[in-house]
Amino acid sequence: MKRAIAKILNYGFVRIVGKERMKKIIPTLAGLSDIDLMTLAYNSMGILKFGNEFESGEHFFVSKVLKDYLKAPAPVLFDVGANIGKYAQMLSREFPEAKIFSFEPNRNTFEILKQNIKQKAECVNAGLGSEPKTGKIYTYAESVTSSHASVYSDVFKVFHGADKIVDIDFEMITIDAFCAQKGIKEIDLLKIDTEGNELEVLKGSRRMLSEDRIKILQFEFGECDVFSRVFLRDFYEMLPNYRIYRLDSKSLIPLFEYNSANEIFRFQNFVAINRKLADR
Image 1 (cartoon, rainbow, N blue to C red):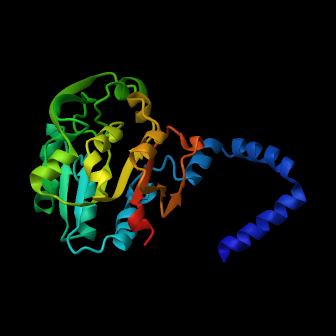
Image 2: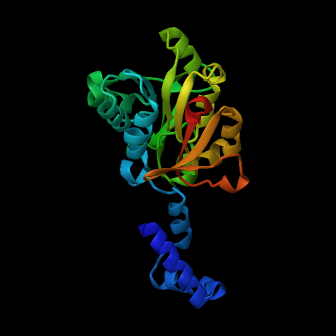
Image 3: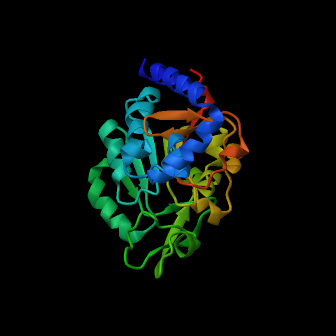
């Protein structure tokens, strides 16, 4: 009702003032109020919302969306790029019987992760990618447990403007191989936060994806993908059997078919729901 009333009032105001005049007035008012119209527009689309789990929509996603879709008493939940375990803790609160696997390649962060989530998840000191190998992950020299850690050094040198970075050796495995080893038949949630390496993680789960064995995904897309040379279209091509949404603070914004207008390299979270589950 409130939204409908606001829409009517807004329509009346535009009719009185005039649409073209409004276009001139809005930038002037924004300038006087020190409001960044671009950021405001992005925020209205669920973009650049990273202050906390409530602003980003992750709390809404876990407590509402996942609760609506996942009915199994003990769902299998993958937290890829677990950092110190905040996301895993949120999953554990909402799904106390869940089998949670937390993957963290940075050995410094991994020790904190183990302490933080203790018996709530199985912690794996490895990164996930398209093939098994060893690699290097980069982070701030003065903050080796930063959540910004990435396999792309330019994320720090160019995007974050870091003066000093360090590299840490780690083991990379694939989701398909891990699931085969553990006898995991289905993943209820695959959450990926790997600072630009999200697509490579998906490439390592081709078998599970092609056989519709992953129900729901949450993944980041934004500035880091500039350095990994990845487009949103690449995710659409990897996820043909999924309906894709942008995650807002308290809603899912459906994006439907691929549109190049959504190639926005600013921080945002996407949710992909298997069509068989979404269409129920």
